[in-house]
Length: 255
Image (cartoon, rainbow, N blue to C red):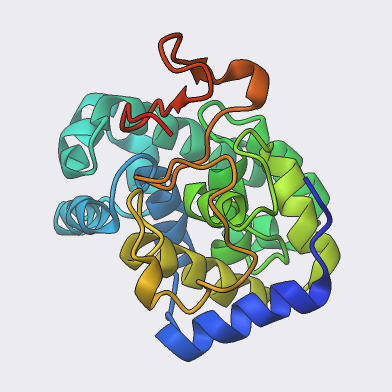
């Protein structure tokens, strides 16, 4: 991936903020609710997460003690709207057990941990990957770390900043190196990227109305129909009947 200049990152932020305004993200009333939401939002949309969280509130189990006590099976039924509920129930139990054992259920003590140490500990919790860990760190504990998700990578790939196979930490490093380590800024920037990905930079994008349509955008090595980046040259699917054409894995059209 090529280096992203600070001025470019700031320009993207200004354009998105002008287009969408403040996002007021993350929508959670407590630290614990944000932590739970970070796990539940894996592979689903926020509307489904909200339904699951409301179930937890109605059952009066959205506390550390109650979540530690409830059975995994019952927890799974309560969070069923979020999808993959058995897997997520297991991950939530792992996270709650970690908080209870490592910090004796004291979230304030957990917040006092340094960013580097807490991040490493979270990543050691089974089922907690970099995006979930960083969402917890940024939104629940106000730690200055940039959250990278599929929306961010999609935008950067389409605008020729990264390759489609760029790794999480490489993309994150570009933002960490190029922006001041400011929690509100990281918070708003990530939320704006999510808004962009949901409304405009979709799998089939709405480029004509995008505020970033003239920002290093091109279709070089991208499918001209769905705009998804093609694979690296050695990995592209070549159509033997059309030697100069490649087939997009997404929409299966020659390009």
